[in-house]
Image (cartoon, rainbow, N blue to C red; front, side, top):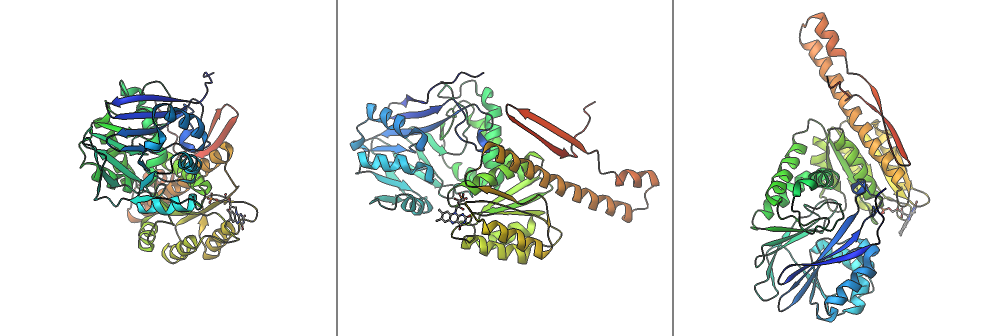
Length: 456
Ligand SMILES: Cc1cc2nc3c(=O)[nH]c(=O)nc-3n(C[C@H](O)[C@H](O)[C@H](O)COP(=O)(O)O)c2cc1C
């Protein structure tokens, strides 16, 4: 049994002017797919002290108290000039609100989507916001002239990375992180983190590999010596290797034979969490996923992604008895774009009536699409069990796509060539069908798999 320790905050000076403040949990923080390795996590915040002081990425609600206590013990909160947000989500609202009560002089620094999200999360606050668009710099003095890169993705449309040329530290927020808690601040002996880093990439980055590649291109401009990540140990010793791995893993996604378009919207994050679990199940089975957040995607982008994909899955929350407008628009594009041979799927989180999920499912059925899994309806926040179910549904969807492709290929092979009878028979074989069972703690699962092969 792993030792259960209290949540705490580790403060460490990375260099003369830069401090990392790591809010640590030794247990699994949330029931989200990326925490499934159950090795705890850290929410890393940073402080740069120039003539002006900037605080990066205060943690979510589960750490508000311990974080602010640790921060106050070392810094006068009233002297903080900027709070730089690598992403904005509702979970951060409580910490930011409490911080504002203690330090009302703060100016937030974030992207334009970040500013919109921040205003909706803190509707009753007077907010001083400096919006960055990628070209400007923020001079903190003492050589800390910060540069920015916009790195949006479907899960974090407001994402920015910040570079400090004085220290060659790149604040990467969600990129290059890992969910692992420990005393090590840097990644000396970094190969011990390889599995965690790969898992983190597979869960969080693989479904939007295209945007990861764009981000990597932008970050190339910064000669960073340290990646100050939002989670897990900071990347110093394994920096080059991890950067190359991100390139390679993203490329692998693009070269998969089959792709699924996963379109969703999520006002409070629940449908987004389901989407992430379904995506993980699909990529695990060797099929690529292209995630699109309908709130941020352009209609042309939706059309292109759906056209190219072999299957499509749509997820929506129900708000006021309806699907959000962006989902209704995306649904129209999907229905007019996707050929009837494509496999479809529907899911969503709801509170009491769930009309949006019914709408998506009925439109898909009426249009004649075959569904790759039974429609997933989850009340409010998903549990560990529902997420496991979603992951398995994703894998089933991927298997169904592969099977359909194999069947198409073998039919083609047999009809096009006058192959020998034995070869024809082999061509018709779709492979063995196995039941793979798993058990971890209270959780157990089983799924049909056609990708099991004998090793020797
Ligand atoms: C303003 C508001 C309106 C809602 N209306 C409905 C509704 O009409 N029917 C329903 O089943 N759930 C309703 N819900 C519950 C949401 O669907 C539920 O909270 C869901 O988990 C949100 O998913 P999301 O986190 O992906 O945005 C409503 C929630 C809010 C905040």
